[in-house]
Image 1 (cartoon, one colour):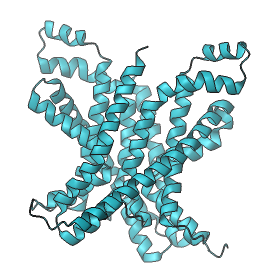
Image 2 (cartoon, each protein chain N blue to C red; image 1 turned 90 degrees about the vertical axis):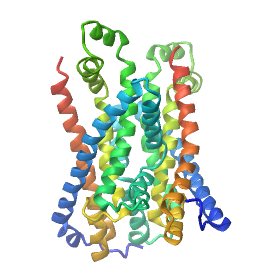
Image 3 (cartoon, rainbow over the protein chains, first blue to last red; image 1 turned 180 degrees about the horizontal axis):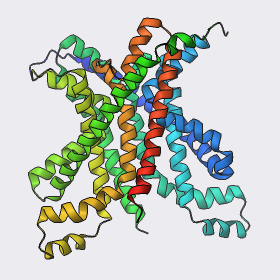
Length: 217
Length: 221
């Protein structure tokens, strides 16, 4: 197993794939979180009935395999609308909406967890809606939301392994290309798995630590 | 701009084959879930056993399952195992990959559920003369499964969604694999995958709905 044909160039190729994985994840998580906060606040603010259309659309992103979402977006934008988007753009768009769908749920739950009496007290003291949101709800809701948000971000990183389907060569795809050439599946998959594990595990542990630390007050 | 003409008839004519695929998808998801729950219970018992080797094994399993992509796990089950000279069919690889993932996530859910059950209950059971296993089986396990019923439903939905990854190891009888094959045959990519998406949506909705009904029946008291 240690007698491998892996060269430095191959390692650079893998590192590039890892870079793409991180880039796609970072872009999607940032855009998805912003959208998710907007959607989540909107859903909380207008109530279940008026938010039903949005809830339905967001629910679709959580009930259909990501692979199909990517293929559909690619087919719709590429062949139906005849727009020339790169695979990278499509991957980021789909993953952003996918993230937003889950994030909206987290945000809504976190706002729900802020006691109504606290918010009423704030409004009674003459705070505007924005002041109440920014100074009262935001700090309290972040405590509830952050651990699950870390879990979501890590989930998106793991799910970004599927963007190969729109011709984006991320880590797992570059590993597969090397497997086809070198015929050393176990060794290469170990490297690939170790990379995911080394990013995901410490952050997951950190999320668990925050959850424990912030829950007993 | 809209020069594309939708041809739903061609895609709808293939609906029976896709529904057959949906059955295979559900079969894999249910099998992986049943085996996954059993394995997760065993892993939970390992982690409680206090034996270093057993709990280390269980923790490693859980952490690998939770911290690597499901696609990677399925690759491992197919190409990784193949380098030991064991060549599994795509069906088996997919089943093993998803089961591994399910067991890991469920074991973690079970651990969370166990925190809600006071230790004194085990001690009470032991004082009444129950064996270690007996106390777990008759006192802890039923409560644990009840508390983690909702996470288990979510995991079931995940299992359905994960079956779509089987196509990467050459699976072509599940819903996604069938759709992919039909796509290669007819090139109606958008129409075919839109139909597949609707079927997936209906399956997941059916699962959450029936889970709610089962919960209402099981947890009456």
